[in-house]
Image (cartoon, rainbow, N blue to C red; front, side, top):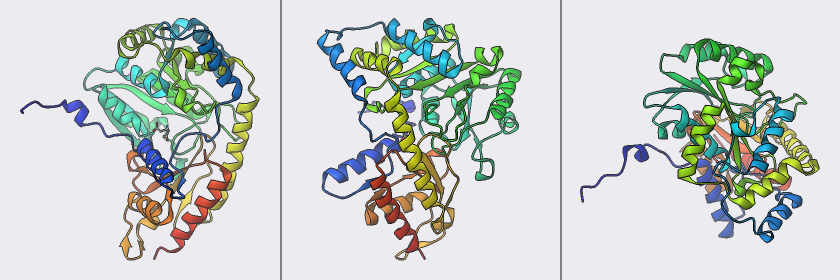
Length: 399
Ligand code: GLU
């Protein structure tokens, strides 16, 4: 048979974060006592009031198609949330409800990019951005950062990468995988550049509710009328409401972009599951105490994990300010060996940790840093303690 599959699909790598999470779950199901630091997924159950709203939706027969871009009720609730939390004025017609943050982002790139358009992606980056950009026929252009600048890039560094093909910049704060948060001043400088050079900003604010420093989350689109016109602000309910499986994300954008996203979504998936939309409505309009409890518990784990990891041999890390990840530099460990086996990359270290120490971590080559690993603290304190003991033991055995 001479039939060939598409070049586009051949160039896409499967998501390694999802693969590692699945592998850890599979090993656990097979009886191994694996600690999984892989998942960017809260261990908490979705709060009861949200689940009850979904059950009520089913019992009320709210089980039919809704408008493709989401119910007006939910869009109004998202509009209110944008106003109160992000200080952003997006009317319901500027909002689209999508199947998780990923779907919102793929819609955005599909709406913005023509073949060959460049998208600047600060590194380290969440591994899905480059793949999404390529799937939309765009070209990812990376800007690298180091621990010295808190793994954040400056407007000047971004400016160096701007060409006449630059269509957009992806900005993710709080950041996955570093947990770092861009300051208002840093965002103002980036906004100024975006307006001056005239490119879009795709603001992925999925972790906006998970900041532990007492600082307020700043949405870049809120920094002026010109940057607002060039920004698509994307978020979702997965992380802050422990709703990963429900698949509810959303975006606010200039209305011409939202219209395009709506048209594409109406053919690709139709609406987000009607029951999940009712649950999302309850999440956004109901009591917030469960959310705050989860945030405080993440903070407790964050502090514990940072205090342990920074004392470990052969590795270093910065204190994360948001999200639920610690980004660990294992470069020195990569120069060593375990039982005679050379480590060389974080991927080999991750393999040793999983096979010999029953501990799953994310090696970060797919995030642009092959000498770093990511540890999620969205797992229980007991699991964190056990897993860190194992990682420490492994590091102590390197020679
Ligand atoms: N965003 C989460 C993570 O980085 C979930 C997995 C994924 O979608 O990649 O772990």
